[in-house]
Each structure stands twice: as C-alpha cells, then as structure tokens.
Length: 406
Image (cartoon, rainbow, N blue to C red; front, top):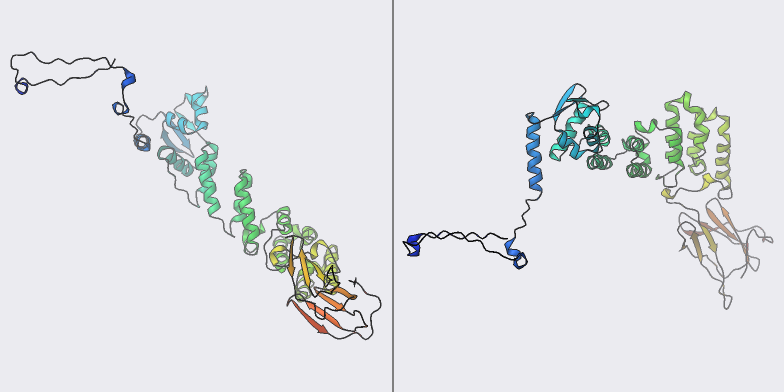
C-alpha cells in the first residue's frame, strides 16, 4: 500500500465556491511498477561518521556522557566505553566480558606513557595522530597493546621513512623486538648498503658479536675497499677491549685481509698492537702475506672479492682455433660464473702461434713461448685490459705450465 497525498485545492482558485474541500485520496500502487525515480538512496558519505566522532570528542573534552575514566601515570582520561570498544578489541574484551573493569568507573593501565595515551585517544576519537620522532616508539607500543593495527602500521611506516646511517641499527633492533619482519629486513638492507657510514656511528658499537659477524660475512655488504671492514672491526673491538678481545679471531675470519692494499697491510694491520699480541690471529696474517706474493695461486674464502668492490673472479680463455680449417684465433675472453656472462678482452698479439704456455701471476696473465722455438713473452694487464711485451726468454721452453694446442 502506497500513500499518495493529494493537493488541497483553494476554492477561489478552482472557481468552485460551494463545493466541499477536496479530500486526500489513497491509491493502491503495485510496488513492481515503481521506477528508480520514485526512490532516493541517500548517503552522506564519510562526513556523517566524521561528524559523529567530532561530537563524541567534544563530549569527551566536556566530560559529557563519559562512563569510564582511564588512569595512566596519574593522569585521568574520561572516555566512552562504546567508542573505545568500537575501535579496540582490547577494550572490547575488557568492557564486554565479565571483567572487574567492566563494572568500575576508574580503570588504571600500566606500562604506557600518559603522552602516548593522549595521542592514542586523539586517534580513536578523530582518526588522526601526530607521529614524531619523539613519540613514535611509545605510540607504536601503545597501539600494539590496544590492537589498533592501522596506527601501528603507520608508526612502522614512519620509522622506515626515517632510516639513516645513525639510526638504522637501533630501528632494526626495535623491529626485531616487535616481530616487524618487513621493517627489520628493510633496516638490514639499508645498513648493508650504507655500511661505510653506519660503522662510524655510536649504534654500531652496541652491536652484538654475532650481529657484527652476520654483517661482515654477507655477500651483500657494500664497500669500496676491504680496509673499511677491517677498521670497523677494530673500532668495535677497541670500544670494549677487555670483553671483546677474545672475539677478535672470529671477526677477522670474515675480514678479507688478502685483498687489502699491501702497504696498508704492512703498516696498519701488522702494525696494530692488539693483533701483534694475538697469536691466534697469525694464521690470517700469514694467509694475506702468501696472497700478496703468490696472487691467485693462493685460494681461500678470504681471497674472493666482494661484489660491491667491482671485482669478481672470472675464468679466462686465451687463444684457440677454428673447428674447421684449424686457423689460430687471437681472442681472449672471460666468463663470470656469478652472472653467467662472457666478456671479450684485448686480443692476443701474434695469434698465429700455438703450443704456448699460459699462467696467472697475481691478477695478470703471462703467455710465453710457442711453436718454432719462440722466446717471446707477453703479459696481459687486467687493470688496463692490455697486452704488454716483456723481456724475452733466455731459453726455449720445453715443458709448458699450460699447453694450448689446436
């Protein structure tokens, strides 16, 4: 049944002065015949809920209709149980179940700061929170306690945006303590990428030994030279020498001393008094000395360059011949096992030779001898990507270190 209200007619307007007043009539209309124009589906949007929250916040400020007082550090916060319960499952469980707090007017909460509680209630009643570097930690802990995930995630995002070499390690420790895996991973990646700067700040000195080992052992550690790692380790050890001296050997195990500059090794590493008085570390010094003399012939986990230094171990192929025809080829190429890519190097001079000896000396390559009693010796300089003729052999080689025959 649908009521349709008729318009009361004015007698003068209608020209009928003596006729009775027109009565409102009721018509029966089938609801199926109603068109969309006969229904208005009105929605005020978010302004409706925001307006109600604003009024509730005004009620809170004037203590109107408040039915509970939250006490934090001696500060009292009048609130509405319904609003708190609607926003927080923590308060819903407190007020909606048969707990003592559900019947008391004053509820005391320990373990949080009054300032953080005030910011939290502002968010509950307005949907807004002012997050700063001073309150983010306490506001995060408060929102975690009261199970407000949106505010908790906003605090975590704020911390991620504030990452800096001076605070990334502290934020990572905070993230680990609160099981924020994404934030902790972001902090670790940031510290690895900015290790040179991170190692200069105070937070670095507070790392645990196992944490420092994890950083300097990582293949993702970004440094421009290995000396940075050595200096970071020694700075960490000297910060608390009495307690950290026994950890020096374990830490130097991850420092690639063979890759530091020979002059730096002699003057700084071997000249360090602590290392001189640590016999358990002599094996690392001996390994570095051998590498500086023998070069790539001395292999260990500490002789492998870090990716961030721009160096990598490659396999070099010198010369060769065509499958058909047997013509000797001048090409020199290297293969990077990490990237799986081949790269062309400078062509080998006098490539018509065959049966020559090839060997590596430090980071260079020597090619000597060859067919028809040749005494020529060529050296490939890896830094210049250039073949250089060096002093000729006094005698023709009979036995070759590496025989390359087409």
